[in-house]
Length: 210
Figure 1 (cartoon, one colour):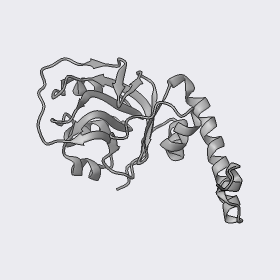
Figure 2 (tube, helix red, strand yellow):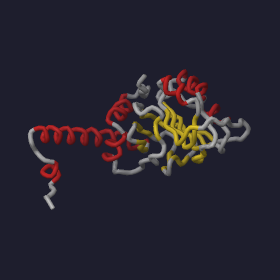
Figure 3 (tube, one colour):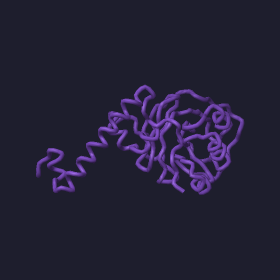
Figure 4 (cartoon, one colour):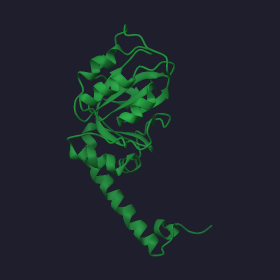
């Protein structure tokens, strides 16, 4: 099953279709998240607004809390401090997220039940996979600024992700980023057409032979 973002905002669907690399390039080549955070299923594409969670390593109490703050089209963005020796997310939380209509999960940490998650079609981007369990005793924080893969993410920011990686777009920049991405996609399609007609990439990019 192909994992596709769920959203009621057509801008999010279009950003997901354009792809993370195009959005990154078109939006100033900034805020690319550490490529070590990868989709479990490489066919996954997501774009949505961040509901952020700050966790203590090896505890997932506040993931359960955060799910109640997230809704249709949102992406749960979990700062687990890069800790990959326990999996605070699994198949049960995946089902709960799907029932709420979330677009996906991005976690700077680990998950487990990876094959069940892939089979569910729910997009999950994670630093690792680990079978070890977590506790439910340490308080976290919901909808606070977090750092994911070296990039600061504010609640309400947009994340776009696919097999190429993840990129953050500030909430205020969504329309500009979308317009710029559309223009870049058109430019590249024109380049592809020129190549089919016999042009070289050196010609198109104004480069010279060494």
